Image 1 (cartoon, helix red, strand yellow):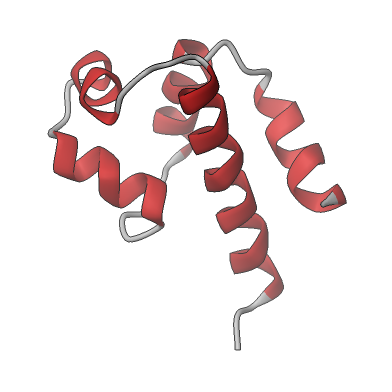
Image 2 (cartoon, one colour):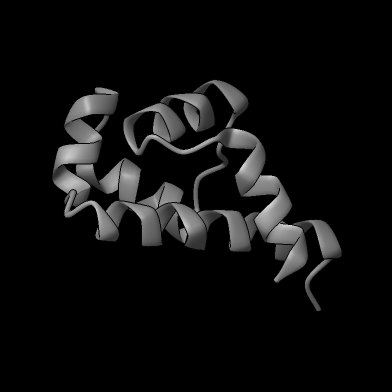
Length: 77
């Protein structure tokens, strides 16, 4: 069974994925902007690679997301 913290992380990752798709940005473009491989970005979105705060800030800046909203929205859904 997933721990409560894991559920919030997966909700945050889903919000990131939805925001990326809504902006019409591919995983390839995200990976290029983050200076990582497409496979690494794919693993981040799928929760297979841990997302650190620095990378989360980078992603939220690219997607023009308020980082605080990710946490609020992940706990309210």
